Length: 229
Image 1 (cartoon, rainbow, N blue to C red):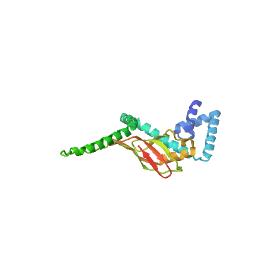
Image 2 (cartoon, rainbow, N blue to C red):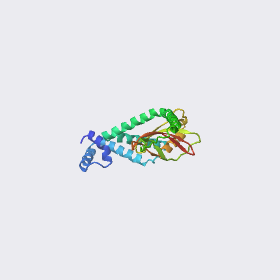
Image 3 (tube, rainbow, N blue to C red):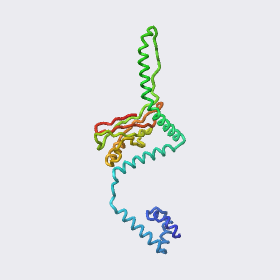
Image 4 (spheres, rainbow, N blue to C red):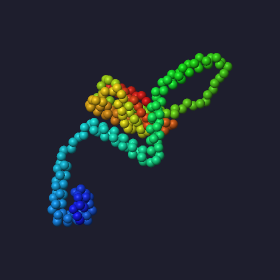
């Protein structure tokens, strides 16, 4: 066995994971090659010293960031598991974009609808001889995601607004800071907010009766949590 082969197998050799025959070949090579023997001896000493170092506790904000990254990666892998999952992912994204585009029109539309209902109620008495019967069953094509449970950690009395993206399983995929918010410059406050978001439990929205991803705007305060779809 040559020195290049030893270099490729040195970590596996030190871990004791090589087959018996390969391990014997490496040990035979080490008996006749002082350079490789010295290299493995130094690596073994380094591994021993590293294992003897005390374990360090990661900072809380790093743990929160890793949770967010893991959620993103889990969602990314899930969307690429099959062609059907990828299609559902893009349909959910298109639905979310369309929902956000239509949101500015919701208030004028609601105002026009209320005006039409008021006008209709004023005209109804003029049709006394007519009876309207309807057997239609109202249905909701879509519902918004909601917060199932929430706890706040170290938040102040000022309003803190966060936009959160929730997938069809009720997991938080990401969050954004809306314009006009200045709290993201405070690392301690940002850590408390991220901890609060990670500990929240969400109920996903639905589209045609099926779970769908959605975006929420959450207002956090010490006393309560306000949610808007």
